[in-house]
Length: 463
Ligand code: UDX
Ligand code: ADP
Image 1: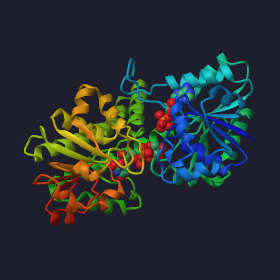
Image 2 (image 1 turned 90 degrees about the vertical axis):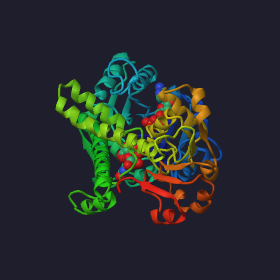
Image 3 (image 1 turned 180 degrees about the vertical axis):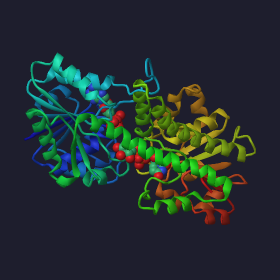
């Protein structure tokens, strides 16, 4: 029976997941800890709309549980020692140095957590991997915990998160499945598995809680994302074919998606997928396959990334060629910077790469996103290191008002499918732009007929 849970990492995964566990399990005390003081302060902000992760419905869940059995704190050691069960939800970015640079997951934050748990724990703990990890990380975790610990026992479980950002609360409330990997062959392993199953069973039907061995669980997370991303790259590859054949990718997607063997989801052509998981997980899969000498397997999955890079690049190149082969000094307004709607997360967002290409062509890029903060936009572009931060600040401007962002622009590029973009006063936007006024819709979001009747030159993906 679990009474106290500690979660290390108060990010996009740890925050929402623990908020929902606390909401649904009032008998369990849940403490979310992070070394980032600002982030914890934001989670504790009296004004619940100021929590650092924007997710529809999350503020209400936090308001319900916070202070009752949900706590956010920077006292990592204390929370670790108190807990019976510890979730590790720290970030595992792609390595930016050394062996596996640009491909393998950087496990340094995970290892630091494991060492911290080993140092601090004075009673037996169940340690749950929540972050997406390469296969067999659990065995590395176990090694560290068992060899540097104070003689206390650790059971390791893998419990990958399948929530999608923007729908996290919904996904957590009614998941398609909850996956828990553990070692059922030992009595302690089976008990640990059962303890976590019991947590989820507070609200998830038992038949939706799947238990497997640890390696299957770890690999399922990577491959679920790889297969989803593959669908997006498949439809994006077809979007290019549609553009040259007078087919319409939405019609094709609808027609093939109605085949129940194919299914209709994740067939929306776009400017390219983003997010913290898809690219990272596929790169990881490719790296793992290569490290076992499975070169064909590695190449097969790598093509999903190559296609995605191509899609982002060709969207940018089409803007340049349509604007008479030069965007130098031209104002191009971006509607949307987040990697999808209903989130303030920008990791791997297509917008960053499209902006980078346009900035290299000396365009003046202006950005409006309903939820992304100004500093984030600059830090995303600076992170690529293509040019100096001063040059980025000079040529990239972030606006709080979409009409201001579009005023005087040669073209608008829609990078994120935020609903509010559809209901803007497009006549007013048109009136403020240079003519011909172009719209490049990277999400097939806007009403083509309406825009054309106003006078816009409208282009979208896959038609
Ligand atoms: C993904 C997985 O869906 C989730 O299960 C996992 O836990 C984490 O990774 P997330 O990255 O939050 O979730 O978003 P997702 O909805 O999968 O979208 C990823 C990207 O693909 C977005 O940029 C989105 O715009 C794009 N996409 C998605 C498309 O371009 N077309 C589609 O049809 C679907
Ligand atoms: P994810 O999308 O996987 O949740 P985030 O980057 O949003 O990733 O969140 C991960 C969080 O983990 C960050 O807020 C980071 O400060 C925190 N973190 C990383 N390492 C540690 C650690 N050793 N102790 C506590 N928190 C950590």
